[in-house]
Length: 91
Image (tube, rainbow, N blue to C red):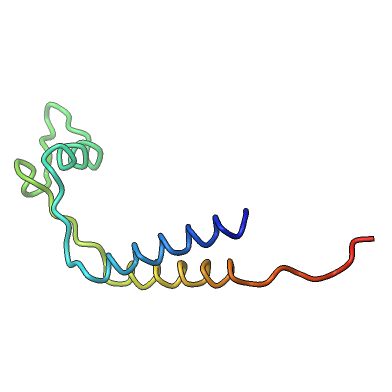
């Protein structure tokens, strides 16, 4: 991968980590909530969905460590992209 691509990915992952650290929960839209409920537990005729609050919007609370992990990976990728290229002769 090129250095510019690694820098971009590193910065995006780092800022996503900051976002996860700043918010406590995400409220999904109605459409997204229906998809999450449908994928998490397939509904059979005798087995209604057992998720609380399936009629409304789903609230997702990411774990606290996720933001730190994303910030760590993003900073490592960003620093890796700034490493100077190897000097040497190919001959």
